Image 1: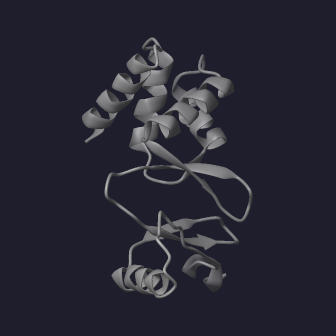
Image 2: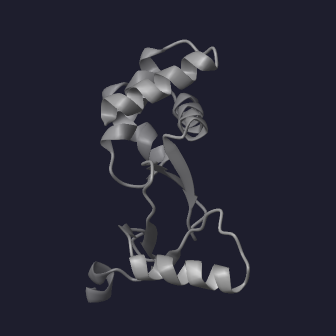
Length: 144
């Protein structure tokens, strides 16, 4: 799957007339290896730890390209910080967000999805997309 995503991005970049760069490849590899919602700053620090020549602006611009080509999605939670998550075709999930430690748990629930569809149908509404974010305290923060 990682090779498919790399090819997807490289094809996208070529179609936009962007040349392939080592820095973009490094950022892509590190982004694809993360399995959490990551901010520009967090990704920058991960990239910089092994590749000090990569700048913050390069990471920012590259993440924007990932969003544009469909590899990533911007997610904005209650704290106002934009984070990025992987986009997997055909997958949908919602989020539990801890307002204390900022941990994020992804979940799927067919019952919730069916209820949303029923409500939309009842109101003659055609759903194009949605997001569900539930805010509270995670189990670790509740124990403290």
